[in-house]
Structure formats: C-alpha cells, structure tokens
Length: 89
Image 1 (cartoon, rainbow, N blue to C red):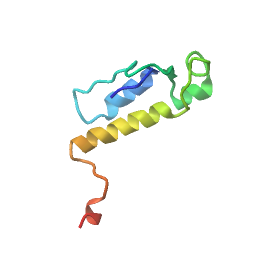
Image 2 (tube, one colour):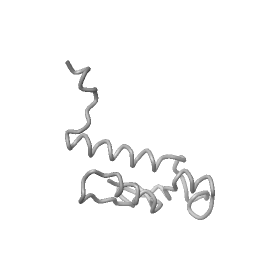
Image 3 (cartoon, helix red, strand yellow):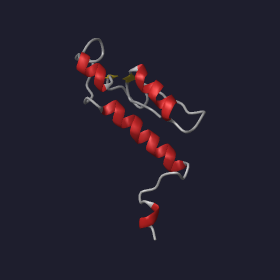
Image 4 (cartoon, rainbow, N blue to C red):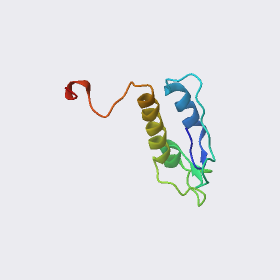
C-alpha cells in the first residue's frame, strides 16, 4: 500500500498487524507529497507533524487509506466482495 506523504509509524505497524498477506509493502512518499499523515490520536495531541502548516491532510485520512488498502487486498484474495453471499442468490 502507499501514502502520498510521510505516514506516522503507527500506520505501518497497523498495516503489518492487519494485512493478511505475509509479504506486503507499505510505501510512503508515493505518487507525490502532501505532507505528514498523523494518526487521529496524534492530531488530537498535537506536536511535530500532527498540527502544523506541513500537515495538509484531513484528520483520519491515514486511517481511511489503510482501511481501503486492506479491503483491496481481501478483494484480491477473493475473501471480500461487494455483496454478502446470501444476497448473490
């Protein structure tokens, strides 16, 4: 998965813990740079990279990107679809 900026390390740890594929990469600074990606907690606490002019992304954007990437991996593995099985019949 990729993020177009500098993700806080918690996103990388979260990705590793939740990704169902053992060998999966997490890349920052991919496809441009829009600033830091703080976690929601870090944004609430403030501090370097979490509450400054170098942080241009909406609070929660990093969490949404990780969740979206995980959903795509599960789809590629055939373990997630748009409809529940009982509605496909």
